[in-house]
Image 1 (cartoon, rainbow, N blue to C red):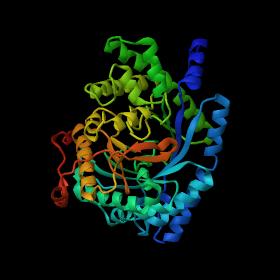
Image 2: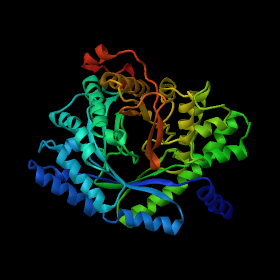
Image 3: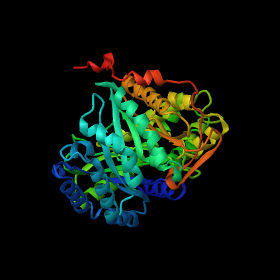
Image 4: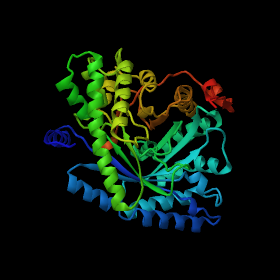
Length: 451
């Protein structure tokens, strides 16, 4: 039952606490676009996307006006391109077609320039990974991802090595914009098939023909609730407050998802309840942790506070909708969170501490700027470390690193908009080159044998 108090509280969340729908993402299957002729494949991809998503942006804007709820991004995710381009052998043509379709439909980003290589690589997968520097430097809205590990398969270290090399090459190809191409590539362990958030969104092989997934946010709402209802209270009360708040936020997301689904004539997929921050003051996950009593995000106690937050968000969200999916938890992207930016700039937050935090939160080492001279093998080793956390713990983890050309520790990289800005963080000066050069596959852990 909706009452006046609930309505007024939601209005306050939107007006004062930066509650928003971060994204409406339409997932589109491209299986019908596979073709041995690259030009025909590209034409099919463009036609399929533009026809299916022609009303996506218009519908999102109409919902914003009618409900008064900001919808920050309208996005598209597609079937992993390495599967679609296998017949033609030309993934780059697919990327260019995706970018053209994204411009035509007016969406902010399109994800799915993806390879799933957790247990090995096909020739098509290798071509896609090799093409990443050109694809991400020649397109404006295309986002890419590579899944290099899973709990069931282990870690494909050959793919990890290629991804480390690709990140360096993308940074070089987009050096005039501070390696901005690297912001559009995520390297995953245990990637999920229904994630609406970029840069890692793709429409998984197990998904249907088309669906609507909604990603919501609201760190400011959670922080304000703690200020009003749980200041200096025991952690039991903190958790209950976060759960109740997450429930209300998820209800808003489900409303928008169902309305968008009905108007577009596309099945409702999932609501992803992820506390996705922005660089704006009052929209920070780090500030939620500090509201729990930490002097600054990154100090002792940060991992425990984040574990409580992530768990309570999931518990509250799952009670509000029968279709919670995606990643659903707390994101900790450094450049996109003003609290994380300040903590990293002050030295309170290190990559090592962020790695520990990724054991208990959604995703992983996200939007982190590192010195431009960081080697490909060091980047690959960081990817391997994060993949191992995901593999052993049976959770999704990811890496989105930006080796900023010409920048060193203490410098700052400015991306603008939702991408924010990032202080260049220190990485270990010691080499992992021999480790990465071994190649092969790190076997799946014992917990993979669950049948």
